[in-house]
Length: 181
Image (cartoon, rainbow, N blue to C red; front, top):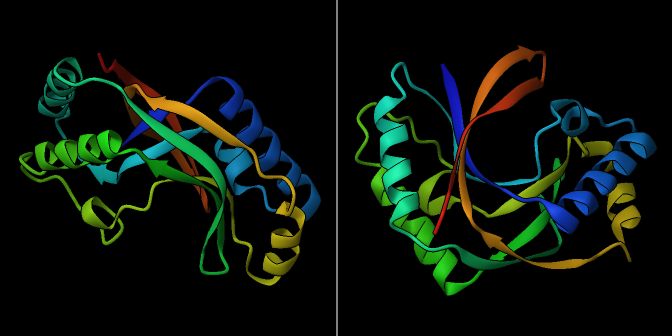
């Protein structure tokens, strides 16, 4: 099975993120993010295949129980080349340390796949749109003056499970959520 690990955000940030992603989808016809219908989140471990998730669940549960939530600031826009637009996430010192500890713990799990955007290369963000390319400049202009900033907590570790994959649309569901202390 394919899984991913994230921190899910609710409240005002979720409402703003979903609204902006939906506006972009409607205005530019770029609907991948809308169709995936994922909760607003910070990816902590990119998708990986794992036959037996039991050890991973145990490690995450133990980690969540033994660690405190950490403040982070979300806002402003960033881009991965001309393909992806996202909300920037600025980790506090404590959040950065928490993520590093989590990655170190996850790296002890045998057969856990790592990509070139995982671990030390992780760029914290909330994706707004995928596939900008020719519409990149227009999307960048569209985002001007739409910035909002949110102080939120990294207060959970959530495992997503891939439930379907059609073309570029990966549908995920929350498999299990663990609250940090």
